[in-house]
Length: 127
Image 1: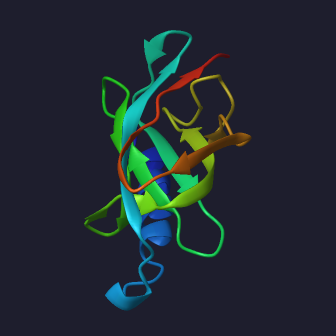
Image 2 (image 1 turned 180 degrees about the vertical axis):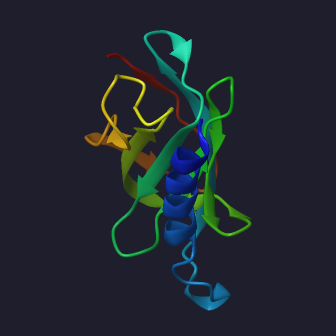
Protein backbone atom coordinates (compact mmCIF):
# COMPACT_ATOMS: atom_id res chain seq x y z
CA UNK A 1 0.00 0.00 0.00
CA UNK A 2 1.44 3.39 -0.85
CA UNK A 3 1.77 6.23 1.66
CA UNK A 4 -1.21 8.37 0.53
CA UNK A 5 -3.51 5.33 0.52
CA UNK A 6 -2.26 4.29 3.95
CA UNK A 7 -2.95 7.82 5.22
CA UNK A 8 -6.55 7.71 3.97
CA UNK A 9 -7.25 4.38 5.68
CA UNK A 10 -5.55 5.41 8.92
CA UNK A 11 -7.46 8.71 8.94
CA UNK A 12 -10.76 6.85 8.62
CA UNK A 13 -9.82 4.43 11.40
CA UNK A 14 -8.73 7.28 13.70
CA UNK A 15 -11.89 9.30 13.06
CA UNK A 16 -14.11 6.31 13.82
CA UNK A 17 -12.12 5.37 16.94
CA UNK A 18 -11.92 8.92 18.31
CA UNK A 19 -15.68 9.24 18.92
CA UNK A 20 -16.62 8.77 22.59
CA UNK A 21 -13.94 8.02 25.17
CA UNK A 22 -15.73 7.79 28.50
CA UNK A 23 -15.92 4.31 30.07
CA UNK A 24 -19.39 5.08 31.50
CA UNK A 25 -20.91 5.55 28.05
CA UNK A 26 -19.29 2.43 26.58
CA UNK A 27 -21.85 -0.23 25.56
CA UNK A 28 -21.35 -3.93 26.32
CA UNK A 29 -18.74 -5.29 23.91
CA UNK A 30 -17.99 -8.61 22.26
CA UNK A 31 -14.57 -9.53 20.85
CA UNK A 32 -14.68 -9.75 17.03
CA UNK A 33 -12.16 -11.25 14.63
CA UNK A 34 -12.14 -13.18 11.39
CA UNK A 35 -10.70 -13.46 7.91
CA UNK A 36 -11.56 -11.66 4.68
CA UNK A 37 -10.94 -13.32 1.32
CA UNK A 38 -11.67 -12.23 -2.22
CA UNK A 39 -12.05 -14.89 -4.90
CA UNK A 40 -10.60 -17.39 -2.42
CA UNK A 41 -7.39 -15.42 -1.69
CA UNK A 42 -6.66 -13.43 1.50
CA UNK A 43 -7.53 -9.73 1.19
CA UNK A 44 -4.67 -7.80 2.82
CA UNK A 45 -4.82 -4.11 3.75
CA UNK A 46 -8.62 -3.85 3.87
CA UNK A 47 -10.43 -1.88 6.53
CA UNK A 48 -13.32 -3.74 8.21
CA UNK A 49 -15.97 -1.51 9.81
CA UNK A 50 -18.82 -2.75 12.01
CA UNK A 51 -21.48 -0.01 12.31
CA UNK A 52 -24.15 -0.40 15.01
CA UNK A 53 -26.99 2.05 15.58
CA UNK A 54 -26.51 4.73 18.23
CA UNK A 55 -22.93 3.98 19.32
CA UNK A 56 -19.50 4.35 17.69
CA UNK A 57 -18.41 1.91 15.02
CA UNK A 58 -15.55 -0.56 15.47
CA UNK A 59 -12.73 -0.96 12.96
CA UNK A 60 -9.91 -3.29 12.08
CA UNK A 61 -7.44 -3.77 9.26
CA UNK A 62 -6.66 -7.07 7.57
CA UNK A 63 -3.10 -8.38 7.65
CA UNK A 64 -1.32 -10.31 4.88
CA UNK A 65 -3.39 -13.43 5.65
CA UNK A 66 -6.67 -11.48 5.56
CA UNK A 67 -7.09 -11.70 9.37
CA UNK A 68 -8.63 -8.78 11.29
CA UNK A 69 -9.53 -7.93 14.89
CA UNK A 70 -11.89 -5.08 15.71
CA UNK A 71 -11.07 -2.14 17.97
CA UNK A 72 -13.88 -0.14 19.55
CA UNK A 73 -12.00 2.90 20.84
CA UNK A 74 -8.25 3.44 20.57
CA UNK A 75 -6.90 0.36 22.37
CA UNK A 76 -10.23 -1.16 23.51
CA UNK A 77 -10.85 -4.39 21.62
CA UNK A 78 -14.29 -5.43 20.41
CA UNK A 79 -17.56 -4.14 19.02
CA UNK A 80 -20.87 -3.17 20.62
CA UNK A 81 -23.19 -6.09 21.28
CA UNK A 82 -26.07 -6.05 18.79
CA UNK A 83 -26.81 -5.79 15.07
CA UNK A 84 -24.21 -4.19 12.76
CA UNK A 85 -23.90 -3.15 9.14
CA UNK A 86 -20.50 -4.37 7.93
CA UNK A 87 -18.36 -2.48 5.44
CA UNK A 88 -15.13 -3.75 3.93
CA UNK A 89 -13.11 -1.19 2.03
CA UNK A 90 -9.83 -1.52 0.19
CA UNK A 91 -7.11 0.82 -0.98
CA UNK A 92 -4.08 -0.47 -2.88
CA UNK A 93 -1.75 1.81 -4.81
CA UNK A 94 -4.55 4.28 -5.48
CA UNK A 95 -7.00 1.61 -6.66
CA UNK A 96 -9.10 -0.92 -4.80
CA UNK A 97 -8.65 -4.66 -5.21
CA UNK A 98 -11.32 -4.68 -7.90
CA UNK A 99 -9.70 -1.85 -9.89
CA UNK A 100 -11.92 0.97 -8.64
CA UNK A 101 -9.99 4.19 -7.91
CA UNK A 102 -9.36 5.18 -4.30
CA UNK A 103 -11.32 3.86 -1.34
CA UNK A 104 -14.05 1.45 -2.42
CA UNK A 105 -16.73 -0.16 -0.28
CA UNK A 106 -16.67 -3.89 -1.06
CA UNK A 107 -19.57 -5.10 1.04
CA UNK A 108 -22.01 -2.57 2.45
CA UNK A 109 -25.09 -4.78 2.57
CA UNK A 110 -23.66 -7.26 5.06
CA UNK A 111 -25.25 -7.62 8.49
CA UNK A 112 -23.84 -9.43 11.54
CA UNK A 113 -24.98 -9.71 15.14
CA UNK A 114 -22.24 -9.32 17.74
CA UNK A 115 -22.85 -11.27 20.95
CA UNK A 116 -21.06 -11.04 24.30
CA UNK A 117 -17.82 -13.03 24.35
CA UNK A 118 -15.85 -14.11 21.30
CA UNK A 119 -17.29 -13.69 17.78
CA UNK A 120 -15.65 -14.95 14.59
CA UNK A 121 -16.97 -13.54 11.31
CA UNK A 122 -15.29 -14.60 8.07
CA UNK A 123 -16.17 -12.79 4.84
CA UNK A 124 -15.72 -14.48 1.46
CA UNK A 125 -16.07 -11.79 -1.20
CA UNK A 126 -16.15 -12.20 -4.97
CA UNK A 127 -15.35 -9.68 -7.69
